[in-house]
Image 1: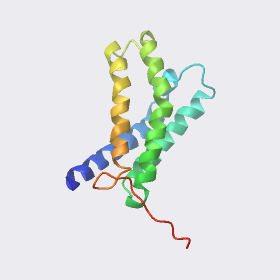
Image 2: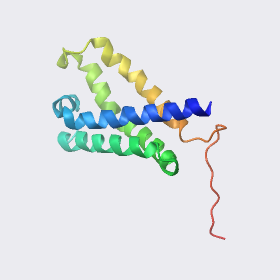
Image 3: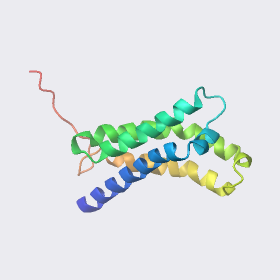
Length: 134
């Protein structure tokens, strides 16, 4: 089980690192999916890309794993409006099948659960470190 969890951690990290790099490789795609009500679309998508790379890399560092996992959960929640925008306005993305947009919505919760797995220790309890201020 430990080897499987380790492999899944590296897979999740790679997924986010490559997704983050893609923000810089194909910025037009990310700018197109930004909901129009959000300000500074270019800055927001580049910030998301930086955090995807940073948090993905931090996930494989044992001391940073828990913080990175919580950061990925926050990031996934923050970008969810873009996924909703794409699903509702699928006609703006004719190159992608409509089902793609609707499938992404529940898959986002799967990614959140996957990241959440790395906020916990091997036996499934939240990691706890006692305070040392006595």
